[in-house]
Image (cartoon, rainbow, N blue to C red):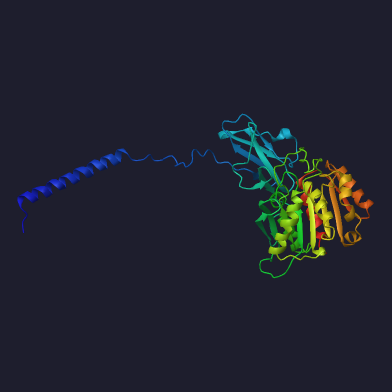
Length: 401
């Protein structure tokens, strides 16, 4: 059947129009083709050059880098890394990348920040961080240590545990280490309370302190009993170095803040004993701490002299309170025959260059005066995590034997 002339003309017109449009589109496509090497798509602004930081070299030298195109001065802040502070100034190189290489550095974990024109920042290319009470540090681990590297042994678990503190009226956090096999076992374990120092927090012992890896190695080698390690937050509010504590309720100068001790007694320890499979005899309970945590350890242990069989004081002593007043407050515990008899270990260790060495020695003499048998070890070094990791490695094998 043939189409009417009207419809045939209309179809012919449409075909011609499509061909014309296609030709125009093809011509436009040829003139608007993208360049052979299109610029990369950017998300969130310019990315800048590739930067690797920190870079740990095979000879244990460490390179720190940061891209700071508008900076005038960049330096590294890293207290535990030995060396002249003048060596920590970063030099500007290609593509506005600043760099410094230090070392060789002894195996271990080290905190650092990068100061850009007077402003401290974490390393933007480093995902490893270590918390403290008021800020966050970047963290670099230099491998090569047999007792704290994360390799070659079964690993325990570290939980970030939040609990309601009735003593402080708010939610608090602690870190809890459970040994390898805890999840698949019905066994009960001894418990070790491990306290941090001033300015730090409950994260510090497992980040820069590497406590979990130290325990993993000790347990795997048979040098330490499997144990649960509880690392609570020692600060109960803002901390300012050198600031005097607030006065007591009766207006007298305060000998220290008891808020942590209340939180520990009313909330931390009860929470652990309710929610974890821990042994609750005195012989199965230990406590230790560094610096401020060492002083808190003595306060907690002496108030509960029949509860702890192992007490460790790292780079510390009686210093959060006046020594004479502390002795009077704890007179009953210091005179307790059962307290002395059941105390299997009172262990103090401080570096010869530590500013708290005089307080440690005073504390050792105080306990000797009252008939205790403290073990005092004087190490090399000062008030640093380099020592505290070593002290934990020496103290933990003596527990629960």
